[in-house]
Image (cartoon, rainbow, N blue to C red; front, side, top):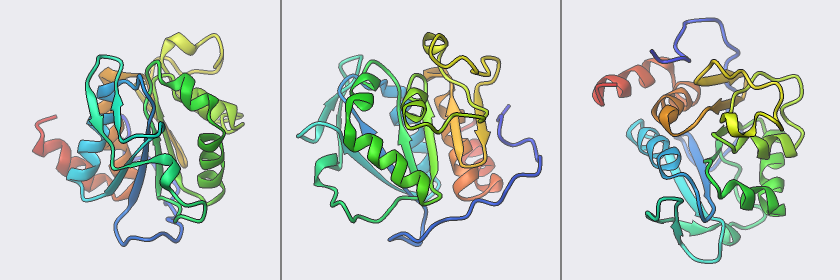
Length: 202
């Protein structure tokens, strides 16, 4: 089952002014990121036609995941100009690298900037703690990996993917494809998400 395809009434996603006619997504990869939580949604989003930019948090463009898989990012995050176009979605994967995301003033500023612009914020596994640091989880429905339950005390632990308006969260590597499909549903349409799900036999 795709948790976000219930047909319930949802607020229409208002896409802010950006630099592309197709939805744009910025993915930030720190060292120690959880590979499945990055690769699966990136793959699903690109299959749907979204323009996905993968930015390395560190100075280079090669980022090593928690399981020693090395991902070739598109750009270092530091190379994004301060006045760069806001993306339609900011995506944060989980894994041990979340500690680096939380320690980065640049990441916190990007999260707040995208939130202020009305962009979709997507976080999986432990990455919702970054949204917590930005003060964006108060009064919101969300989920996360049980390992951060002591810090995020309102986790809806029985749900694999939770979408609350412009906030999409998910539990971990095992829910990464569902997470990606929910982002396609939010950025494009439920029909497009269902199309991609059928094409990958999900």
